[in-house]
Image 1 (cartoon, rainbow, N blue to C red):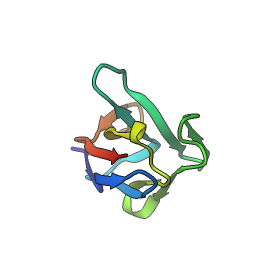
Image 2 (cartoon, rainbow, N blue to C red):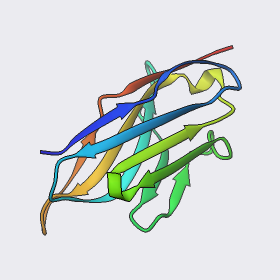
Image 3 (cartoon, helix red, strand yellow):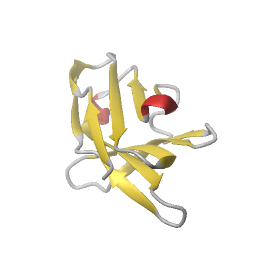
Length: 120
């Protein structure tokens, strides 16, 4: 059973920084894609950042140059370093991973979400 556990959200002033972490627990799996999404009331999930198995990263235009996604493969952990935060970055942030659990089965798992609030 794979579980994703997030940490690192909180309240920060505009211009500040936060670092989110998300660790996948369990065994016998491999991770293909690690994502960070965010959601605000009344809006759809927005893909904020992605890191693929080969290390390629992608970012939403709204966070390019401010956010950095990284990973620790040995720890099955993905990070989101968020700098120069803006009030519009306020959201619940979710990590999500596409995980291969057997030779023929891949599933997407989600973390519990962590609130990030940026005050002006």
